Length: 388
Image 1 (cartoon, rainbow, N blue to C red):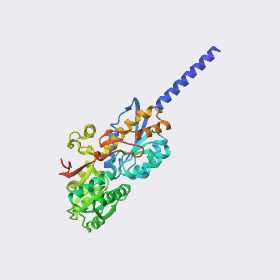
Image 2: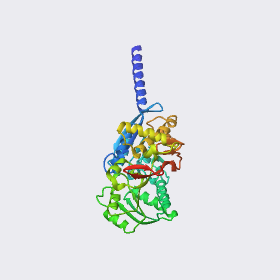
Image 3: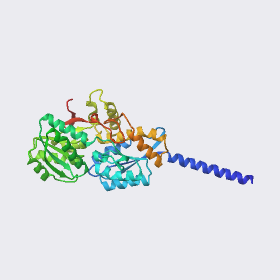
Image 4: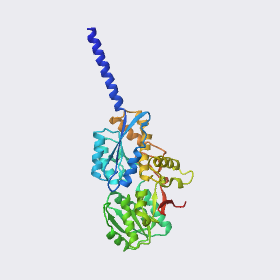
């Protein structure tokens, strides 16, 4: 009898030990990431993927595992990747994706599964207007409305009164058409032409000729990554001498390489990180931007930093700020922890990131203000801070 009891005690101790080990394994935080590392948006997605290698392995004393997937710049693939992360990998949060259409597609899965999603794409519509689905979604890039206002203010100061627009034929282009119209109208700026193009187009001659026929004072190309070079090159080849604006969607050095001298004089709003060392001393995010730039370029080479990798870094900083309060309420790997993390993200205040200062709330899941933008001009195939 004593031997039997001893055996049962040993079995119980082994079972308890195994249960504790399983509990500890489950307590590890898992963060998924979906980026467009291949396809038309690869120039944006690659620095985001690279940035993931710099993420911390421990947050608030908890080990963190990152699972990074490539959606190949495709919204359907982004949705599949999101579903895999929440159902198979059982992640606590997801960062991504690179493109606005992909991020928008992923929001449905975020809400269905109760998993916080921190988008690194630009469209305001990813998190606005707030509803039950978007309550699970946050975003680190600047709203296109914030950047559109900067462009129209620059136009007003330059005495430009008419604007032609060539925009991508997707959610990113939709958002920019909506926001540039809102920003232009109160300033007396007329939009005299709107044309659309696809990221995969090999020519935009028809669109360029239609815009040129209206003789606008300026043209805005509303696109992201290297595909946004084509409309500008076409305009210049057809002899357009007016001002050309681009969006923060082109803020990486691959665009300078592909565009070359055709991009000379282009004006655009960007996140401060792109010109970190040109910022005046005391600029709120200068130190954070330089720290990220140095860390990234140490790993990937001088001049390799881009604003897109910085958006991914800011997403990590946002989660790093929100995780400690969530850990006090629940254990990673549980629905309760994901809910606590979502609630904690809404409460992040005065968080300095590479692109600015974030103040989030239940109605504002981006939290950036005009400190998150500066105006630059492309000069001698480099980014030059206007006014510097």
